Image (cartoon, rainbow, N blue to C red):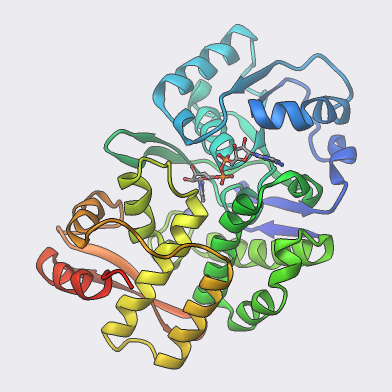
Length: 354
Ligand code: NAD
Ligand code: ZN
């Protein structure tokens, strides 16, 4: 399947097909490129990628896998690497890996020589359904996640679901977090489809995964095409992320993968919506059930005051108020702002360990 992100002169396509890697040169014509990948992906698929690119000598920079690489020191190393290998102004970067590689490689391509082309070849479910699409790039500061970054759209996103066969159950669950999010914010029938095909997803059934990736990318493409810079509609993608980011920061990215933190975040943010009477008991129960069926542990060993503190560095906050995207109805969400005082009371109610 092929989908279009419609952004005028910055438009590009997403190509989704099992085995598409073999035909990579149909989509990447640029020969003055460098590959950025991580050590795990390099070991699993490094040779396959080079073969698909025609076995030409392509400079490749391999970073250590994991969120810890999303920092300014790694960015500097990559920029020097690009310069050492004389990647020109009209050259490009091939980002080959999960969301971490995509975020760093995208960021580097947005600042190297004031911006060069990049191509996304995402290899995790999370990256295939979410982070490779939409042009958000970034790295972390000790003060918080993704505090440095840019909007820089790729030239193309090439998605091969065959990569997902080597993911662990927890990595599949991580992608599933963002997939469930799409259902809740935009598409109730899709939410039902996910529930009905949960075993297929967990077992990496090719057909089911391709369908899930396609619909997720359609939803993200629609949202990004309407609101590239997150002034309105795109904010809805942050459902589950206010608490999710707080959990990631507080546990130093050790306890949860990103999508797992989002699953737990959606669980408690739905509780907030229910507590405030924004959403019906029946529907919120459906959401809790589906989240629990992913086998995520929704108990958090943190108190509400820690979570409250951590939500203060959220990028969405405005005038000292903390932003939440909350479900209101099937396939609908709404942004609400809370003062610290009000939020403290709400979190105290909602974050009691069951
Ligand atoms: P990741 O890139 O760390 O990948 C997870 C692990 O899987 C890594 O150890 C990686 O080496 C390994 N891996 C990758 N492909 C594999 C494969 N095919 N088989 C086996 N192992 C493989 O993490 P992620 O979950 O892909 O992405 C999370 C990151 O994405 C976070 O930093 C998050 O902030 C970012 N993100 C960005 C956006 C965006 O719009 N830019 C959206 C969502 C998330
Ligand atoms: Zn996310």
